[in-house]
Image (tube, rainbow, N blue to C red; front, side, top):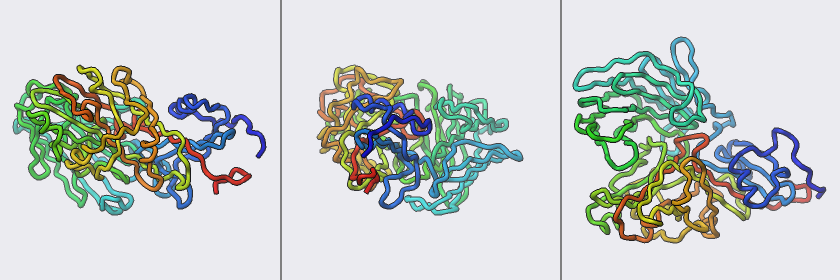
Length: 453
């Protein structure tokens, strides 16, 4: 084989920050690494996937894949473009796995392909919400297209907003995912009811509330397609509070989530077979972050996070030499030294997550990393990278979805909890620039011309 030359084609130079970091860690000269295949529909016998990009080192012959859990292209290879277009008084979604049309306050979402959860091409849901405070309906102005996504500065013109005075209603889209949520920044001063007036053969996911971290929980009830939040549930809470109800995901996996449990007896909580709260049950994930914890707030609380990464684009016969998982930190609180160190363990969770996935991982105590993510150095404004050990690399699927479970060390060791230890990381739903990513370095059989056999 001829001597490798430096990569000079601007379209092939590596620019991905996480790939560059991984090349530096492995001592691979980035000047000889080329980008050679973008996201593409999965094809039998090929390593292409809508969830992964591929690079190769011209010197060593190693291949590098960077994998996440959000699709970047549609079934026929057309690029997904999360965002809204305005025409003739309506907003239309750009190319995605679904079609969304917004006319005034009315939203219609149509499925554009068959989905693993049973939704079919042209399945549809329409809703036209009414918001009331203490029985009095609240009005709003026209929808405004926000220039920058309030939850992710890397996304543009992908969020519509209606101002109701007591709160703001937002409709957000990213790759393969649409979410509506109502943002309360202060106590509205009464009972809130959101009647969605929905119709169609795709249900809305109702009943999700996300407070500003933990666990000063706000509660609501669902009656039909109406969400009801009593006035007392807004008193003394930490704001903002988000109430979400939307069609959710339109791609293979339900993406990441968490299962939480609490009890006034420590071992009853820790050893529970079922979680008491699951933010991904039946595809109701609305949060753009996931939490892990072993903490005391009166009761004992445990939470384990779960990741789904579609790694089926890897060649079935490849040999994985290095795999590095990068997590973007959001919040870290550790009052007991070492209790919040984050681990990666084999995932055997359902898809979507179920309450029983908590207990199913009690026996999973073999660490899949070279060492825990140290809470003392875990960045909350950047990616945190950690290499998988040989055991962890063995969990990577070359034919489907790689599942991982993320508990904290205080949970795994069943240590005595006396204080608050919790953290959150940004999830797939946060989107570009924040979502969990797996960088896999591998080798494949090649002929003398460098073609993959």
